[in-house]
Image (cartoon, rainbow, N blue to C red; front, side, top):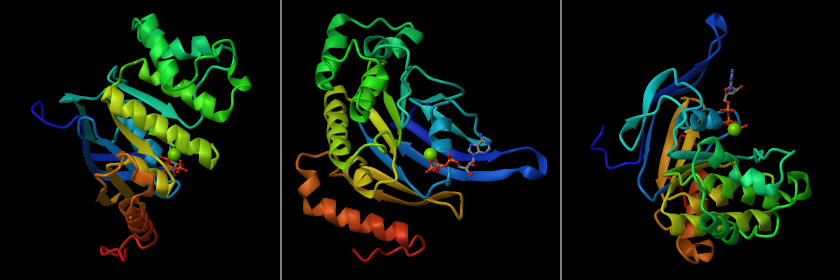
Length: 258
Ligand SMILES: Nc1ncnc2c1ncn2[C@@H]1O[C@H](COP(=O)(O)OP(=O)(O)OP(=O)(O)O)[C@@H](O)[C@H]1O
Ligand SMILES: [Mg+2]
């Protein structure tokens, strides 16, 4: 495994919750990988185990079976090489933006230079929010602060769990654009869980469709044009949307109509 060319390798991953007869199998035998400077989108119906999968990949929840390797090292707990952004922002309501942005780095005892701080605030267009509390921000601003905080950890892998789900369409698309600008500039990889077909196609160079019947992966679509300039209006974007929609609506037909 140490010689793997992949950043993240997930093998035979399974999760069963609950004791004794109340056991509930949520995930079974899940395999996938994420390369360097790569992106993966994960879609699937509510309750199929997407958050569970992300938490295990982040080292925040122990798997029942299987293994996770990041840069060849077995993940047994939270890793400095990964940062997580959740839908619920994860900002501390009693701290101002300036403090919230630095919390992750402080927790990991990482030095953040003034230049690095100014640069990420500029990239995410949150330069003038330092003195505000989270409740004084819009949803989009809060999520940009959460992204800035994650980026200051300089992660090799960013894990995002429905990060833009609470936002209106235009704000959501702006945030997707922000994420891609960061991705191109800062050379990390990301895994994004989303319910949104367009978002998965726009952001994921591969798209994993979870299958709740088997508790595993139903399909993986290659989507190499994700993230390229002008993709949102490209014919391939529309055809990939149709393919993904078809596979989600007809999970056991292998040949999509689109
Ligand atoms: N700590 C836990 N203890 C017991 N069951 C759990 C626990 N966490 C999750 N589950 C169960 O595992 C299943 C998958 O939950 P999970 O949150 O991973 O789904 P999801 O795909 O992220 O759903 P959604 O799209 O609604 O966010 C659910 O049935 C949930 O009730
Ligand atoms: Mg979830």
